[in-house]
Structures are given as C-alpha cells and as structure tokens.
Length: 148
Picture: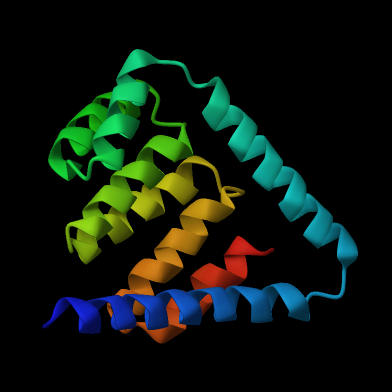
C-alpha cells in the first residue's frame, strides 16, 4: 500500500474513533459526566507531568523517536514495578499498536483498564485497537466505557 493510502486509512480510522466517542459522549444527558471526564483529563495530564522517573522519561523519548522496542522494554520494567499504574500499560499498547501488533496492544490496553477502571484513555485506545481489527461491536463497547 502506498504511503498516501496509508495516511488516508489512518485518518478514516481516527475519524471513526472520534466520531464514536463523540456520539457516546453527546448521548449522555448528565452534564456531570462531561465534567468528570474533563477533570479526569486534567488529572491524567497532571500525573504525567509529575512522573519524573528517568526511565519513564527515557521511554517517552524512545516513543518520540518511534523506537518502539526500546520503549516497550523500559515500560515493561516500570509496569512490573508498578502494575497499578495504567499509563505504563497504555503506553506499551500504543507502541505495540504502532508496530502493527494489534492483539498484543489489546492485551496491554486491557491491563491498563484493569489497573484503573476509570482510566478512559485505556478504553479509548482499546476501542481504537478493535477498530483496526474490524471488531466494531467491541470498539463501540470500549468507546462507551471511555465516556461513562
């Protein structure tokens, strides 16, 4: 597949994911859920900024340079030490998804949401993984959990 076609497919998948997320988010009548989601976003961003573990910073640098195996190696060490931290599992899943390892990514995102069932990013990325695997029903369920 040519590079242009890959970018178009990636855009379509991303658009579909965002659309599903918006549909589920807009269908909620309780405004407090939207406020809770916004507060959770601020919390996650704040927590990420506070994580000054040099290994995590190095893993993020490896992600930025698309050195997925090196990032996974570092993140797996961190996840073993702190299995309750959903961000480590989520980042592992993102790396695996970037390498085309969709099933492994699903496993990592599931560990992310098992570690913290309120971690909406894990559900969003789980849904995105299911979309890539053409498992629309599972994707819808994950997106719904991301906004509830």
